[in-house]
Image 1 (tube, rainbow, N blue to C red):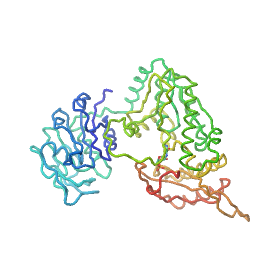
Image 2 (image 1 turned 90 degrees about the vertical axis):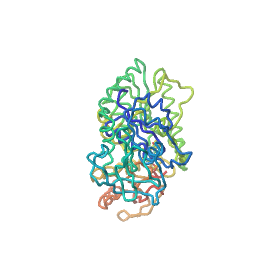
Image 3 (image 1 turned 120 degrees about the horizontal axis):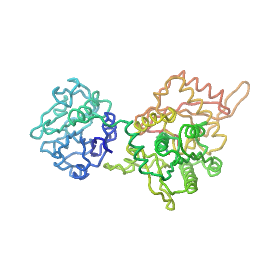
Image 4 (image 1 turned 180 degrees about the vertical axis):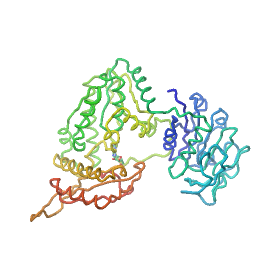
Length: 517
Ligand code: XMP
């Protein structure tokens, strides 16, 4: 890749991916690397800019991540953010102390308007602060460029050495002019030209894929999700019929979704499309099973049994492609970033599996391995993949299996598919779809008494779920207007057979999860 590069050195902060995304939004290619990456390797990558991230530590703690002073003399401008800002001061001989009062949340700063970093930023603006230490004495040759009421050194710099530091987080949207500040650093300080554009990415990737694949075959597992769909689109453009997409339909997708995926990829793209319908096999394996984890395990195991069998049948004398994206690589530890802390396994995510030993391909191809989700969507749109696929909501691997509580039966799948379709249709018509990150229907294992005409009914309950969230780690239930809820409830009871009651899930995450199982 010949793009200019910004390296984000990861010191363990929670917003690191956000920093990288913002840099990319500024049109500059960016990669996250561990803080202890040898300086020689950093130099070899020939970066145009370096950013130190925040982190939960104190620079005086001997076990906290540090960096050699040499990083400041390799001729690449540096911007330190939060912990990274304190590290700049500490490493170059300044002093860092604990604040009497930690600053957290939206804070007003006053900045020095002749700093390149603050060009086109008003003298007073609101930024996002989150720190308990602060820089109390600057290293020689530095000057303060911004302060707040409680932080005398909210930003500082040594412009001749191209070293800049901000105590606040320009990457979060709460910092009013944060993006402008990052833009200023990249363009005014580092001289970036904005050469990271998606059209070029497609052209370069297609050329690279053609060269790498030659006349060999490629197999891709297509789930109908955003990532595998865009990977399929790119590979199809690169090698056409040399690509085979294997689509396993376990019968747990939303209404008509399997047909939509098949139609899209057989009509719009040049490739071999292999659909495996195996609903009956899944239903047999799930018969009588009610435990959520067991259901997830069975669906995952069956899925991969079917998938690998199909792969063996197609032959492995070529490449295996995957829709892995950059955050997947980072989260699985392949993104070369600092791994701090560990996360408990809350649910078995069945998309993390190992390839069986007997299956050996010439190599693995991850055409989207360097992209963030929003970039994947841009590429998808440019490739002409339909809007509904490019903007598809997250959909769990086990599909409706985790939205049917209790035993999964054919009848329940049908009820839920119908109910979910009605709910989605009504949300779409109401014009609030864009405000919701995810919305769907759930079929709890509950029947209740109702009345229809003169008759008593004893039938299914449908729960509807809609959330707003930034990252799905936490989520809030969406405040859907009452009149929309009323229409949904009406339609569900009238149009979906065996539904006689509707409830709206008003649980946030935590304590709830987005899915019910
Ligand atoms: P939870 O229920 O954990 O969901 O709050 C967070 C987000 O993850 C999606 N989800 C999954 N995605 N495989 C996936 O690919 C899974 O097994 C899975 N389980 C949950 C969920 O829909 C939500 O967007």
